[in-house]
Image (spheres, rainbow, N blue to C red):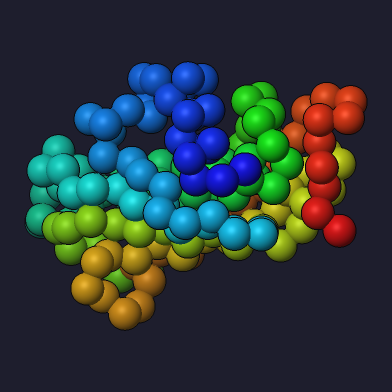
Length: 145
């Protein structure tokens, strides 16, 4: 799926989360990966002026979902079955980007990793590994070899 196809699909299937007010956007999609952005919102800050871990986890999960859908097509019931996050350094106030890379896409599972970064910082602020369950959907699933 292309960026435009993914944005239309997500807006239709998940309007509560994928709308202009959410600050989420898909910047790029490629075979086995994507880059997404979470625009800065003051409500994302926790005490101490750092972006909350929950915001980084949600962005990483969104990145994995986008990467999985880009690989297998519009399968809304693909779901997270595992997400592990390591917070590496303080996430300063500002936009976050997450770059997902699929390590394996099979008939029933997709496994990947995500680096979360703050704009203007060279090093990631979090590293995520995640596994998605892909529901059986007959001929609609196109695993990557």
